[in-house]
Length: 141
Length: 285
Image 1 (cartoon, each protein chain N blue to C red):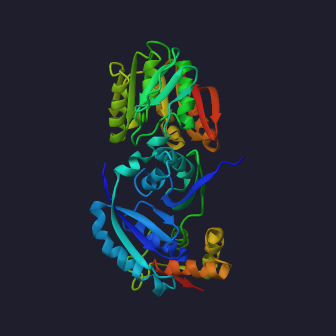
Image 2: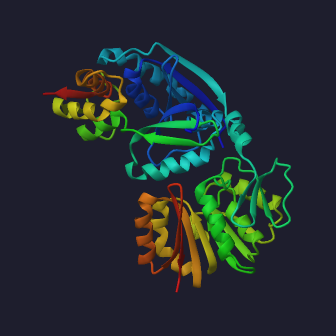
Image 3: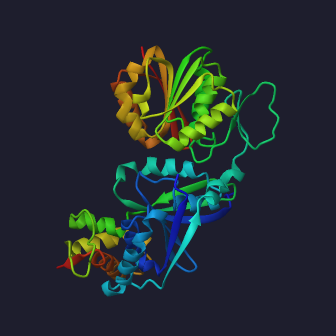
């Protein structure tokens, strides 16, 4: 019989560089999961993506064992990669720091689609476009 | 360790989550948690970063101007660290490894069997309670390779569990190294608790650079990246015929680790797997 799921924890963590500090500690400690065990496994599995922030979904079972699934990097990381920039704008209204094309926008939306709440690719593109603009990245044709 | 944090909870629909998380991370949060009911992004700032709150608030207020949903509420609260640091203790229980090693939490009252070698551990926040497959694999391998009087090194000792096991199995001298000062404190406490402080030395230092002389057995249960990077250093710290016991990597990364060891001139003796984790033994001939 399948083990009974106690809770599902969703975190966004730095690839290969998670630590027992918050948010990992409070989230997993409360669920009774051995914090360092998760940290070690996550870091080992994501070491080759260092520099990105990765959404991870941790399923905790009744016996306190757990499994986790790592998803696509944060939209902002994919946008930075596409625009070829290190970081977003500190003042996104006035200072633009980069551009991505609609085609790049669509590719990012397609990659993120399974993790987003969006019903169709157009809705996903709107979310990604908003995220891009909030970083000072413009969408160009 | 810094014990004071501020939790920042931004209540917002999931469509805004990536943008909110990006802002929180940019201003000092080391990751975020996503929660439902109400949907929100939770980040934590170390107390001394509290001055960033204003900037976070300003940036989040802009989101609707970019076509994203608005943050409905920003809740800021102080958090105490000790609660979550102890919460998982309830689930750490006495367990047996290999033929005769038993790992027992310091608060357990279980009586040992006559044939058992008992190690008492208080893990705190350091790694290594035996519950993790890599620690369990290393314990079984130690039983096989540690003989009375041997000189042993443990790189990345964490709780000190493997170093203590080596001493209890008869090692003459054990050098345990960790680069995390918290782990060093935890390990020293555990070494004393087990009465092996005459043979186990816990050193705070940078892996291999903290070692002197040669060893009969060297243990390293860290991660594949570290094992690969430091492989060329291994032979100079191993006696002829000495063994290097490694773990901490998953099957997918095993080839890379094996390759690095073989390039360093070490011969693969045995490989074990538990769940997706791998442990292996290499010998210097």
